[in-house]
Amino acid sequence: MVVVMAPGVDEAQVEEVSTRLRLMGLQVHRTDSRGRITLGAVGDLGALDVDDVRHLPGVQDVVRISVPYKLASRAFRSESTLVRVKDTVIGGPHIAVMAGPCAVESEEQVEQTAVAVARAGATILRGGAFKPRTSPYTFQGLGEEGMKILRRVADRHGLAVVSEVMDTSHVAIAERWVDILQVGARNMQNFALLREVGKTRKPVLLKRGMSGTIEEWLMAAEYVLAGGNHQVMLCERGIRTFETAMRNTLDLSCVPLLHQLTHLPVVVDPSHAVGVRDKVPPMALAAVAAGADALLIEVHPHPEKALSDGAQSLDPVMFEDLMRRMQGVALAVDRTIGPSSAS
Ligand code: PEP
Ligand code: MN
Image (cartoon, rainbow, N blue to C red; front, top):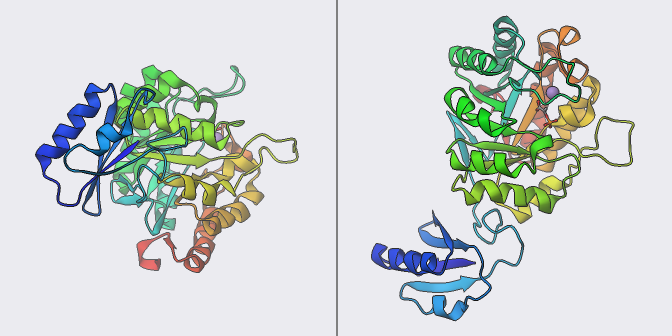
């Protein structure tokens, strides 16, 4: 439930109400927004009499949240969450771009990619160090060494870093080297991992599971939020449907729906959705039109030599061209994208 405090309420009253809610066995998440304090109280509300809370001093209203995800819902927080990573704000009028190779292969490969994507206007460098591969016999990633490479290269180019954690033991390692912790599609319902990233204060990029419903996805986000980490982004990367012509089916209609259901920023990854290079640009343009707050795009300096996902990786020339075209679509939906000089 959401406890809306009266305008101008004093801190002692907020503290008193928070303490009472905790004594009822609830977890309390405070939000200060537009001069208004709200307390999100989550837990077992079964035996609770809402009027007991409504009549506490300083309380203006109490609203029950009817959907199963609470902290992720617009009812809990009507204002959109802004995720801040270095100089990039995700969830506001500017659309952020995260770009880089599927996997970190070498410092030279990451350096060449970073030069290209930074020049084209991306501000966040992506790269897998711990790779969730379908086959145990394919390249599994460089592990922590890969994250160190990302950090060194990103710092040289003023970029932030996003990289995947596959296991609870990766979280402490990633916290040292990366700015955004990615939870991959295969781990959307790895609840131990979600709890672990929820204990950190690093932004989390939570990918949609390949057969995850929107409600299951928001419940997964709820695990992270319940840990006190409120910097969560949702990333649509294609789902598995009856259609096998493409790698996955990009569910772009989830973008406007999520904006209605949740205050969390929505990211679209067209690369893993389509699986083939030439279909990435049209779906990236469509994602901007649909209202994505950020895009995640695989870029490799030599896609034909990539150790993973080369077929869907853009080369630097294609990426630069796409960034230019995305600016036009962004303008049409009152957003900006790409290099700040062009926005
Ligand atoms: C990735 O982004 O590197 C990745 C493996 O994506 P997904 O979890 O969406 O398959
Ligand atoms: Mn990939």
